[in-house]
Structures are given as C-alpha cells and as structure tokens.
Length: 317
Ligand code: 5RP
Image 1 (cartoon, rainbow, N blue to C red):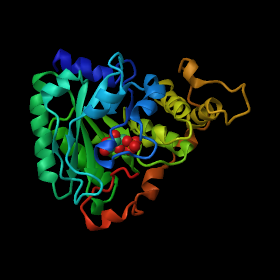
Image 2: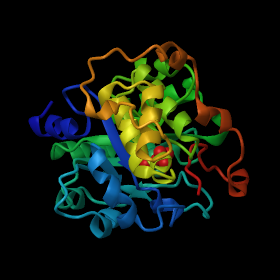
Image 3: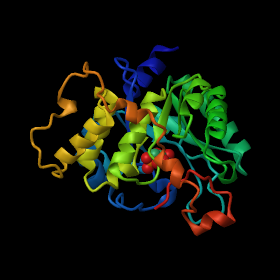
Image 4: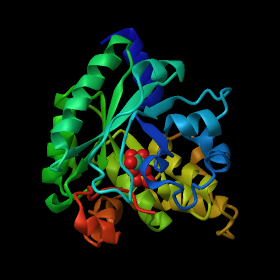
C-alpha cells in the first residue's frame, strides 16, 4: 500500500491499537438542521479534542471547524437527496477529489445503498471514487445502507460491506447487528460502526463495546454523542471503551461522573489510566447480544419512509 494512503489511514485508525473513534457531524447533508446539531460550530468545539477524526461535509468543515485544528477530517463527498425528497438512495459524488485535497481530507466518504433503487449508481460511484482517490493516496470510507425491505441483519449488512470492500473501499462503515462477527469476518477491510439513532447512554456504550468485541475497529458516532444531555461526558465514555478497554460499567460510571450524575466521586476514570487491567467481571454480561439499535429498527421512523425507497438505516431527526 502506498505510504501516503497508509499514513492517512493511520490518522483515522490508530496503529498502536488498531482502534478508531470517529465523531460524525455530516447529518445535515440530507437532514438539514438535525436536532441538537443546529449549530455545528458550537456542537463540535467542546468535543472535537476527544475524537480521533471528524466525519464532516465540506460546508461544515469550512464554516464550523477551525483550520488550526489538527484533527483528521473524513470528508463526505456524496449527496443529492434530502429527507423530504423521493428517494434518499439517489446520491452522486458532489465534491471533487481536488476539493478534498484542498480541504486536507484524510479520507473521503460516500454512501452506497445496497438493495435500493439507486444501488447501481452508488456502487459504480464508489468504484470511480476509489480510482480517483487512490491517485492521490486518499483512502475511501464507504457508508453502507441497505434497502428498507431487506432488514438490518448480518446477512444484508455483510453483503453490503463486502460489496463496498470489493469495490476497493479502504474502510467500511455499517450498523451493528446480532451476529456482527459474521459481518466483520467476511469483510476484508476494517469496519467501523455507526451509532444510529439516539438511545440511552448506557445502551450506546454497550453498542460500542459489542462492536469492538465483535471485531470492529471502532465507532463513527454522531447522535448518541451530541444528542446526549452531556456530549463531553459521552464522548469520553465511548473513548474509554475504544482506547482504554473499559467495560460498559466502567464507561457508564465515567459518563455519570463526568456529567455530574454520580455522587460517588471516588470512582476511577478509565480514561486516565493505562489499559492493562482486565476488562472487569461484568465482561461476561457484556458479551450477551445486545443491540439496542436493532430492537428499535423496525419501527417506522418517519411517514415519508413508507412511500419511498429510503434506506432503512437513515438517521432521523
Ligand atoms: C449520515 C452518516 C453518519 O455519519 C452516521 O449515520 C453516523 O452517525 P450516527 O451515529 O448519528 O448514526 O453517515 O448519513
């Protein structure tokens, strides 16, 4: 692999532990002013230093992230549809590779919509984006969505991830599901898990833990961080799992402590300690399948979904 490409991937997936914490703030590209992301600059500022990289659109990067920041940018380069349009799968590449270079992107990202009306277009676009990006040593992150009627399970998510990897994506983002090991094992490139819609903090930490445990390199989490009542506490709690091997109990205790919800001030902060300790006795409990996203995923989020081919995994306001 080219040095530049490898170097950029290393900014996103930390080589010392092969883990990644991405902060996703790209939702506005089709959702507009998403709840609690109405002012991206204010949202991003206090939490930026806790993520390894930021998933962003060019508009948000230009307007809401300081150019002095040394946080690597994963630039979304696809778009073309909105939540009130006919079909969210009708995306194209909207940002040139030259613009990605000008913005000093560490990677470019786009969505593929497997099993959707515009599947062909988005998969071909992924292949073309890989062709362009590899000329400049820029990795491509493929965001996988599957058609609503297909179900967000290991069968279809592994299909979508594998299709993305076969087109040359260097990192694949998908959703957590039961039997997630199958998705990871059949995908030859690193997998990162999207947080999905807002769920209770402990469940989001469990999702993070389960994802890592199943072999994902990390999470690309948005709403479960900045829609939390305490985003700064939440991102540090997620980070403690990804980079400090904290258990769910430890991470949640950290969340409570940092958010002022815990009166027990003597609890230790896993973020501040080296991670050589075994995870903790609760680990067994954490291994149980627990996919809060999936439990809720069959509920229609939005009446618009019924009349269109919108992908099932689309974030909702
Ligand atoms: C939007 C995206 C988001 O980056 C992705 O969904 C992660 O955010 P969240 O944790 O809120 O799901 O790709 O299309």
